[in-house]
Length: 179
Ligand SMILES: [Zn+2]
Image (cartoon, rainbow, N blue to C red; front, top):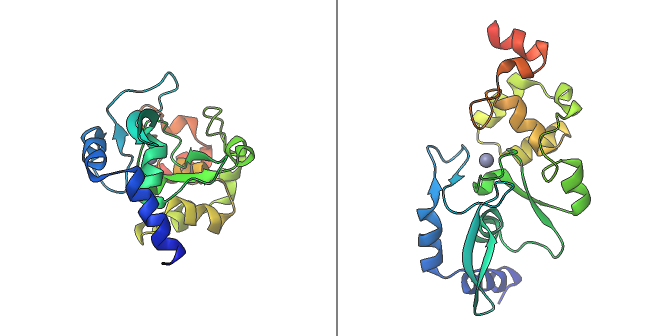
C-alpha cells in the first residue's frame, strides 16, 4: 500500500459518502472557478460550519476545512486553511490553501481585508491570461511571488460580494479598466 492510498483511505473514513452529499446541499455555486458560497450555518466571522463525524463522534468543523480535506487531503498539524479569495464563506477548494499561522497572518486571511502592497508586482493581463488557461490562484501567487489573496484582488476588482467598487483599487487599475 502506498502512502497516498493510505492517506486516501483515511480521508474516506473521515468523510463517508453521505457527508459529501450533505456538504453539497449547503454549497451555492454559479461556476466551478468562482467562489462556492456556504449557505449553511456561519460563525460570527462568516466562516461556514458543518457537522461531520470525527473519531466516531459528531463534531462541528469549519466548512472550508472540510472542503480542503475532502478535495486536497489532510491538513498538516497546526496549519490554518486560508482563503486565496479573501471570502470567509467560500468553500471552493481551488481558493483554499494550507498555511502556517505565520503565513496566515502575512496573508491576513484571519485579519480581515487589508490591501496587499504586493498588487503592484502583478501584471494583471498576464494573470488573466494564465487564469484563463486554468492556472489556480495558488499557482499564480507562486508565479508572481505574492500572497494568493493579492491575486484574487487583482483578478476580480468587483470583489466577491459585488459591493467593492473599482474606486477602492489603484488608479492604474481603474485606468486599465476604463481603457
Ligand atoms: Zn472563493
